[in-house]
Image 1: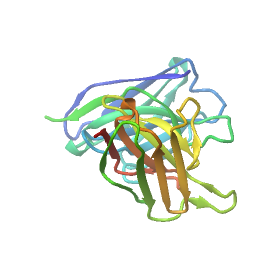
Image 2 (image 1 turned 90 degrees about the vertical axis):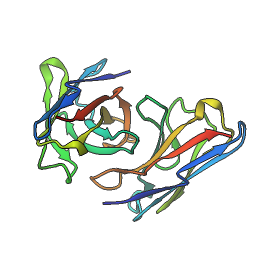
Image 3 (image 1 turned 180 degrees about the vertical axis):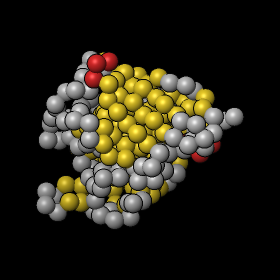
Length: 126
Length: 113
């Protein structure tokens, strides 16, 4: 069973860039099994917002509302993928989850998330 | 964007009783070419990430107890817990994956009466 673990600063100042890394174990971000490595966030006490995904080929798809500020990348040598969100404000305060969607089965879909990290709280404050 | 609206926002059910959660999408998530509804359900317990329960509106994920079932088509869907157990206390979310911008409902909190 693949395991995902987020890491990164828990506090980011307004206007700066939020940077998070997700380390994948018992699986590979380079797997050609059609996995979509995703980021989803949840403001405290609120619902879920999909941020985007990066495919093993490096292709990406971002939420249009965040697209101008989001960059995702793969680090194949360390079996990680990462999220950068620029020009953050207090509205970006949330628990950020890395997650995996898709898979080789025809029953799976890129946006069906069957594996989640535990999440990491990022607070935007000066 | 497809807006997902769940009802109720919260419900309290006695142990062993049925819990029903509704989810309505602002447009159909039924893809006519394969007759599949692009709708999933997730369970989130306090302090934990969500867990996928149901996909394609009615297919139960491996390992999910059979007291959980999903139904509906087009724009209206239901998650049913046939006999509520203490471990089912959680917030439940529906999600559409019909478009390239997946969206979630606001969540329904299920508690024990």
